[in-house]
Length: 382
Image (cartoon, rainbow, N blue to C red; front, side):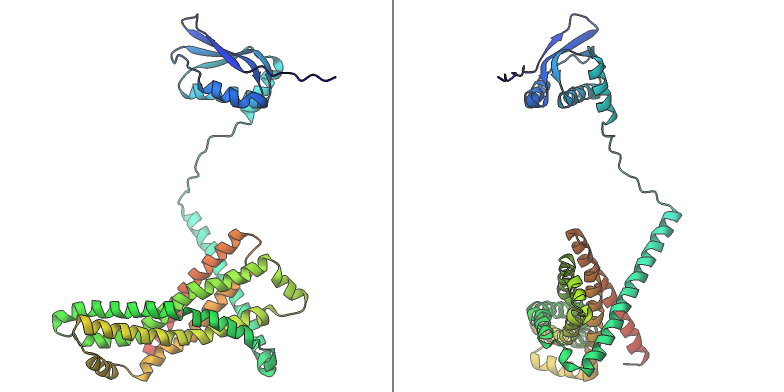
């Protein structure tokens, strides 16, 4: 026949007969089964701040690690308040238990202070240079394999996955038309309003049309569209390929003998290179419409005069300068998105990090490519 041993509830009493000492006598069971009650008991203890406090554990019936930790925490909180605390009435086993708890007490948190030094700066710079070199090699690897796949597709057109290209074109181009058109409309309106505000002071209101037309067609239309596509479609490519990497679908393609570049990379980059010039043209037209409405309302330039001045200010060459940049920017965005997607590890944190890096790198390189084209066209007087 088994008997259940009943726990003695934890209790305390304070002996303050001495003017210099006060003894806090703990009694009962201080174990994990009575831990909640013991915690409430500890919170109700009120002691004199100016006398030495002795924690007497000799009357405790049962004490385990949880109860000892609670007593240790009580001692620490009293010492933190400026009291002097002593543990008395400890047996050898309980003394060893408190020693183990003290030894395994977590150290005080100290935030790491980053030391600014020339060596640390050079080390960080070197690491960044190495990472940039690795990214460049990875992009060249994808670009080379893309060239091999394209040559194969040209020789065997049936290998081109037309449905996949059409699906990606629908996602990257048709689905992006509303937001690109709205953004470009607003940008054209803002350029005309700000230009008119300053040119009006010199009586040169009409030249707002020249400013908006040339700026939109040569620079603003294509670069803002590329940035929008990098944030919208580039991040989507990275997330899709990263999810495939996490689910080992990319490894499965290798196992069954299919080329990852041919199946996953080529349709996305090809669709993006077709979509970005189309989106750039739509963005240019929307920006010019926004500029025309603003000049009509804000500067009292009627649509007929706006179109006449716009026709005199721009040529087809001005339009093509912006359109020609689009496929190269699309290639850069697609390469970076695919490289970052194929670098994703097996965690969601890795997926989020590489998706962010994809957008940041793509936007940076888009601006760099636009600057290179600006220097090139200036050198050939275009």
